[in-house]
Structure formats: structure tokens, C-alpha cells
Length: 457
Image (cartoon, rainbow, N blue to C red):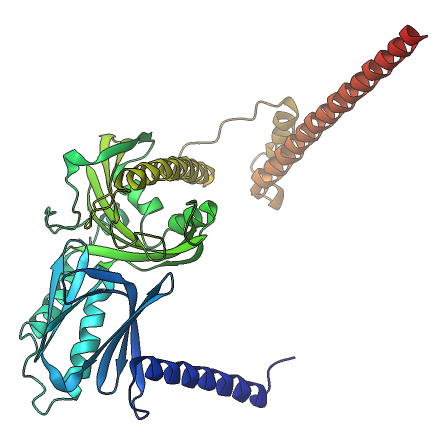
């Protein structure tokens, strides 16, 4: 039965009560007045402590007059409260693969590290919240915010080369015009990364990206589902101002470690640069809940180079940079390299299957041809064609009839029936061979039992 208005109201009431309970719990944890309302949340965010160390990944909460941060790992909880009345300035910056939002107060300075694709949105939330609480809204906020927004909108329209005409315009839509720069998206140097996979593909570079990595492709979703990942979220490609075209992925993976949780959330950021002869793809991801999650992150450098008009070669390199020292560094690097190699090899296998299926579908598509069709090789089909196309002797110059116009349809139907008959014959032959083999096995087993029984006697 369809839901009634009363049912909808009940669901809304339950949702509102749940939000109210969560807000009350947060107010209690942060020791806030009961008048404070929760306006927004941003996650994942890493908070830089006053001593310079980074905390575990947590959540940023925006209240009416406060900005609060919370995180929890192995029962160790971290809470931080910033009053908007004490804030002097809000600024933004980039470092490695993170987008940093700096909040300066009268007594100290706070840094919140966000994923690159979500950093701009988090910065706008914080600056807008602080702006609404000040008598002079423009004071203390970066003056280049509007310029950045204008540059971002301009780069979104200019960063991707759109072809207005031509037979290959659909492929040109994926090409990037911005120059690719080593601007710190990856911490690892290319020569220091470990090469894990080198594979050849029977397609050009643009087709490789189009079928496996474009926003229209579902390959990434299928790849993560094949690995057994859950809660898969894949964002669209968009301009990230600093690093070009980026997108953010979030998914839950199984953890094979002896200690820690059985699953963890992975936050991954990707960026790409595509030209007709080369594709560069860089990825960086962090894991939230595992031990030592804030000590390191995993980086990968993908490079697909055109070998011929219909082939390219892919090389995948891996890096595991650390931002804190630990005696488990060698173990973490070894386990990460092993699991990543298995995952990338699985990716290559699925990618080749996808490209092969796509090529097969292209071959099955009907192609227009101006040449006359070749005569059928089957004698029965030739005879049918002659009967359909022949005219009576008494009417050598008669006008075409319906039978003449539909002769191609009749021939195709006859060919289809003959083909199906051959397929049925082959299937019956396989079934017969299978049953004969089963009988032989049973007969051999029966003789063996008889010989054994006679030997005992």
C-alpha cells in the first residue's frame, strides 16, 4: 500500500527527534548552551593541535556561535571548541594532498586539513558562519575569495577542450588544455615510487580513459564492487582550482590486519591530465579507522602512453609517504605494496574484459555499405534467392512486386533458421558426448568394484 500522509508525518517526526537527540548530545560533549543549533557538519577533517601534531580524522560541527571539532579512535576522544567571537581571520591554503582551512583567534591559530575536493566547500561554510556573526562581514576574510570563485568558474569552462565539429568531437571532450605541473599533489617523487604493474591494452589512450575513467563510465563502480567494497560513492570530475580536474571517492574496504577494525572508510582523491598520446592519473587516499591512520597515506601514479593507433601501455607506481615516525613503517609499506599489487592486477584484468566487450559490441553494430551483398554460399539459400528474384517468362518487364521488395527479408529469415538448426545440432552433439562420458565412467567404476569383490573372494 502507498504511504499515507500520517505515515510520512511519523517518519518526519522520528527523523526530527533523532536530529534533536544528536544535537543535544553534541551540545553536552562540547559544553555549549542549550540555545545553540547545529547548522552543518563536515567530514573527514584532521585537526592540527597546538603542539603541532595532527589528530585523528574527525568531524567539524558548525553551530550558531561556535565551531567545534570531534574525533574518536580506540576510545580516545578529542573535542575542541572555537568561539566565533574570538575569531580574527579565516584563510585557506594547500599542503600536499590536503586543503587547509586556518582559523586564527585572539589566543592561537587552528588548522583543519580537509580532502582537496571538499576543502573549498568547508572553507565557505566556516567563512560564511563567521561572516554572519560579525558586525563588519568583510573584515578578516581572504580578499581573493571572489577572484578564486571567478577563476574556478572560468577554468571549469576552459580546462576541458570542447570540440564544436569533427567526427572525433566526442573524444576531444575529455582532453585537458591546462599544462600538467608537478605542483605537490603527490608527496612521493616519481623515481622513488615502486613500479607494481605494466600492462598493454588494445586501444588508444583517449578510449582507455573514456571507457574506464570518465564520468559516463561505470567501470570504477564495478571494480570496487568486484573487490567487495561497500558504501561506494564516486564524485564527478570537477575543477579543483589548484590541481586541475579532480574527483573524490569514498568507500568501505575490508581490513586484513590482525589488530584494529575489520573494515575502514577510505577517502580517495584523483586528478588526471589527458592528451591524445598520454594519460597521467594521480591518486591519493587515506584510511580513517585503522591504527596509525594519521601516520601515512597511499599514493599512486598511473601513466598510459600511446604505442600505436590502437594500443597503449599502462604503468602503475606506488608510494607510501609517512608524516610521522613509527617502528612499524617497514611492515606497513610491505603490506600496503602487496595488497595494492593484487588490487591493481585485478583492475587490469577487469579493464581488459571491459575493453574486449566494448570492441565486440562495436563489431556487432550494423555498418553501412554501398557495395552489393555477396551471394550466399549455402546452396539452399542460393536456390531460394533465385526463386524470389526470378520473373515469369510472360512478364519480362513487369513492375516490382511485394515479393521482390521483401526478398532480402526472406533470405535473412531463411539464413537465421539454418543457423539456429546448426546450433541445435551442435548442442545435441555436446549433450550426447557428455552422457556417453558419464556412462563410460559408471561402467569403469562398476568393473573396478567387481574386480575388487572377486579378488576378496
